Image 1 (tube, rainbow, N blue to C red):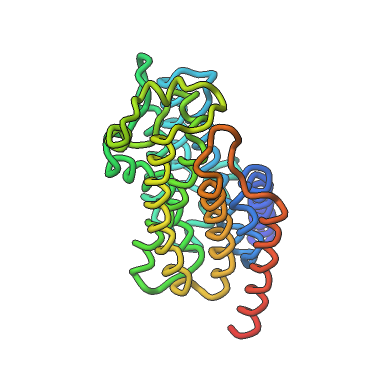
Image 2 (cartoon, rainbow, N blue to C red):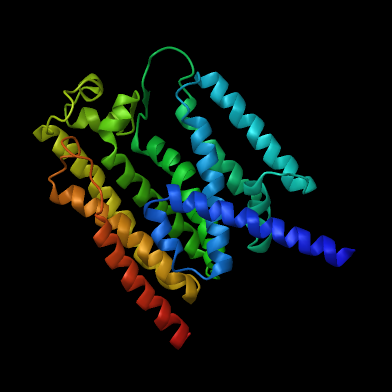
Length: 309
């Protein structure tokens, strides 16, 4: 009977991970190419964490609902996760997979709570029409930490590491990724009444908040806007150096995945830089052929890691 029960649980877990892999393949875009280079247990865990993160984001970003209702649903979902993790009684495939992944790779549950807390930061303007803004770069850093660095801190536990300095480097790698996203999405975020570029930096470049919120769609950036975006890009470039330093600190078989992920995100930032920071006329992206070329090199690194590991 125990053997039957174990087989049932194993099939249930396999099915849960399969659903998480499908979510990652459909939604992850830049992330999924990196996942492909990981050994199966690590890939499954990363996909489970991504699916968990995706659900939290979807609940927070459901613009058909008022902010208060989105927050209520997020709180209810997080409570359901806590119950599922404590009791093991759940039919939610994402919860089943994440519970296994956190146990298998010793992922602190507090990190997942922080991850969800990051999604709620975009819900802070629950009433009125005031835009979501960040006064200083320190304020923006805290937002980036919760929505991106925490993901990095979870990922390195799945990747494997022993040197504690990897944690700060993973934090800063997450900052680099999120600053890249912010640069890419300035116009899209403004349309949603969000400006992530710090108010202090807008003032330094003599840019009014309202001018970013109500600029003509697709209009090229002004000289001042280009200078502002270049300043944020320079900060991101500094944090990408942390990604380079992190690479040798994680488990050899996981390094190709991190290398692919960093290479794709850094390529996105460089495309923004080469476009002279015109993120308004056309949304910046890394072409599929370039992603596939990076993935191919990542696969070569996988083979080398297995051969010389």
